[in-house]
Image 1 (cartoon, rainbow, N blue to C red):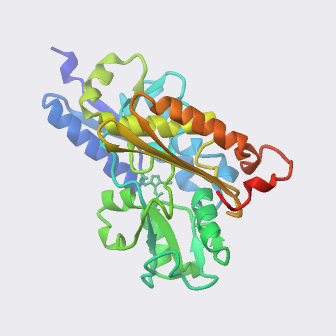
Image 2 (tube, helix red, strand yellow; image 1 turned 120 degrees about the vertical axis):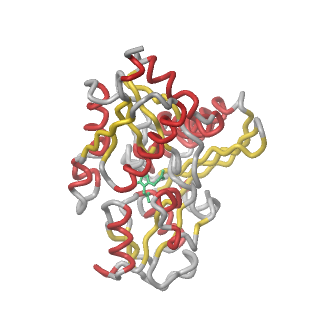
Length: 324
Ligand SMILES: NCc1[nH]cc(CCC(=O)O)c1CC(=O)O
């Protein structure tokens, strides 16, 4: 058939991490469909070019994904591969997540030239570079003395700036998954357990995105979907939607299957300075997960999550201060 000779075109950002991720997915699709040619369309995003400013100043994280989304929407590519953490929790009109492969390590890790083994071990007033409001708030919550400064750029650049001690950064926090995928495992000596630092929604997971009406690509991608990972990340994205939040907000959320059919669902909403935090820690079954997410969101909102997220200028009620 002619159709099977048409290549499958995968669009992706051109950063080192994005390339590795897209090529892994391409290789897996190639193994599933040996008669298909796999081609790549590398797109340098606006966000990758502007590394010195906070994301919200350069136009939000849509900058990283919009050009790639458009390539798929316009038919220049069949599929895009993203770190799911970088995607908005609301799907772009006309696109859908075709598959979520098995999720990688969800944790963050502490990276420093000095080899500090934990957040507690960091020296007083050390400068930690991060552009993540979540990591900033979580660090300040544990260590209010730490000086946070903005460190953006792709993973190898950030690593280099910290390891060479340039610009005075004493340490940074990175996702374990990104370092693993890039083969930078020598920097994975000090992972932070999820009780100490709950990760961002969908950390460690990839998304294969295609046009919602492209049943050929949807069908081809389906075998790459990992049902448990998909259930976890869908729960995490649902919490973000209930809270009208994304990764610009100091929010952490993790759904994890503990034993088949049973999940632990944790979330944390912080004030930007880490002074206040609200957390929830729930159990759910596959069947109840959706309801548990919804109830958790309602409870976080009741306890003042909206105000923590800066949607209201009212002072915080007393019960919302540092206990949570
Ligand atoms: N924000 C950038 C980003 N998006 C996805 C990853 C790593 C891989 C992942 O979490 O899936 C990273 C790097 C990091 O946070 O250190």
